[in-house]
Image (tube, rainbow over all chains, first blue to last red; front, side, top):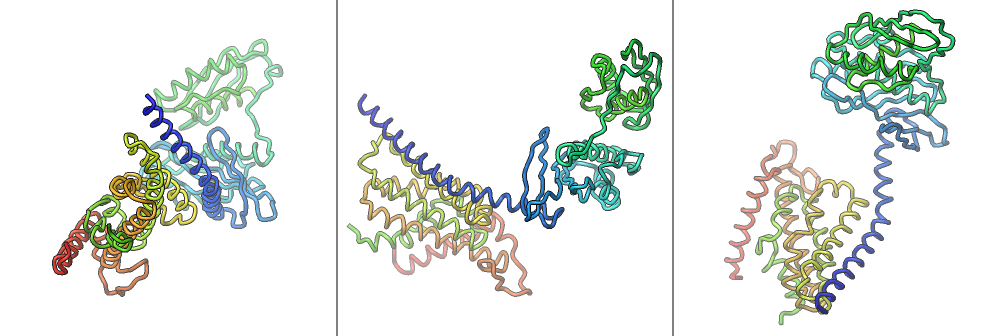
Length: 271
Length: 200
């Protein structure tokens, strides 16, 4: 018994001393290691902002945004490490936006787009279309940025993701007003309205019935989105909008473009 | 009882951990791709060996023999973790090149072997000398292997090109089979020399 106690105590003492020693060493080395990691990241940011001297990380909905400052502490812009939905899954990319809301750089990271087809997103003609776009531009597929034919899913996914990221950056870092698809229903007279907005492949047309200041019915008149996928969006979005009496509703995952299209079409109908 | 000088030199020649005892083969084969990697690995192991031998010899009357192995592993793991953190902080390139083989020094049989076979039965001074000898022997052997593999596999020594542009590197020496081939040739050479010199 006394022996067992002695063994346990011996190990406990050795373990405690070792642990203490390690925490001391870690206290010395951890800041150095972190400094170097920051330094390496700073070099990556220099690709977008050559004068960057300091950055701050902010996590917004699971994506990291880096505010960049020059040596004098002046805000230069934001780099977002973000993801778009492509054809083969997520496309990781960095988007750099300067302090006036212009896209000054984009770097495509890991993606699984089809070589020779979807990987046009990482080639100059597409990158050139993106760089220089402003926060105030629509940044909408088919409106001011053309998708690449044969690779509409990859390029369309990128364009809608860039719009989303621009909204996040604009709202959180640049103090820009993001135009929200919100309707004041009390100002809408009773009646049946028709609206049209771009979905995943082409326009979605909806018919909205308003009575007594409430949306009572939404019907999809026509759409051209993928059967089986867009159905989920239609089934999911219509009750959500009617229940919330608002367009501020969550998208149906897996069919976000169709969902967004329905929201936009209802907005167009009622505005 | 052997003199301190003999205690030191045995680790380099008669009981060289790599060429005579064939201990610690896993890191030996894996990291001896270049001279600097071999040297770095050797020095990291030397530091751990020195620390663990010193502490274990100092505590040899304090640690109950039934729990000595967990106690040794605790002590060794502490030194290895310190080495890992220090290398990461001050020599990031070497840390990256050695990678997983730094934490794996914990289970390097040279270190536990010296603790079990030597430090727990000998004085602190002798244990430190033993650790220095073994550590230097390990470092030298790894560096020699690294020099050979780098020279013929990449045409350079310690990163400095020496073979000239006409030299066609023997790529196989930089790969795992090359490690076995080089080690085998070195073992043969060392055995031959020991026979020749009549040391056994």
